[in-house]
Structures are given as C-alpha cells and as structure tokens.
Image 1 (cartoon, rainbow, N blue to C red):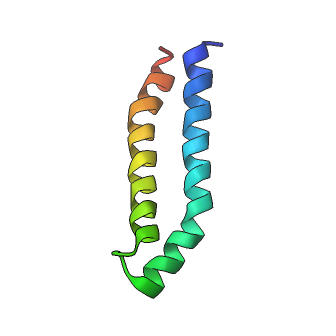
Image 2: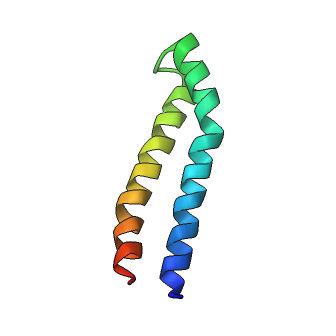
Length: 65
C-alpha cells in the first residue's frame, strides 16, 4: 500500500476525530454565548481545517498518488 494513502487516511481520520471532540463544546458555546465566543470561533476554525484537509487529501488518496 502506498505510504501517502496511509498517511493521508490517517490525517483525515485525525481531522474528523478532532471535529468529534470539539463538536459538543462548540454547540454548547454557540447556543449559550453566540458565534462570537472564543470556543465557538475555535470550533469554526476546526470545521474549516477539517474541510480543507478533506479537500486536499481525499483526491490524492482516491488517485492513489
């Protein structure tokens, strides 16, 4: 198996895992303090990072490069 596929898959899984960890806290802060609170802004940053990771890594993994 190609190393880039393995490491790309691990990176995507870690990104999704990080999103799963921050999601409950993010949703709580969003409901109680709104989108301007630091935790909510951090959660938005995590979501953006996960989306960028998926957009960059998944096409390479699918292509097998």
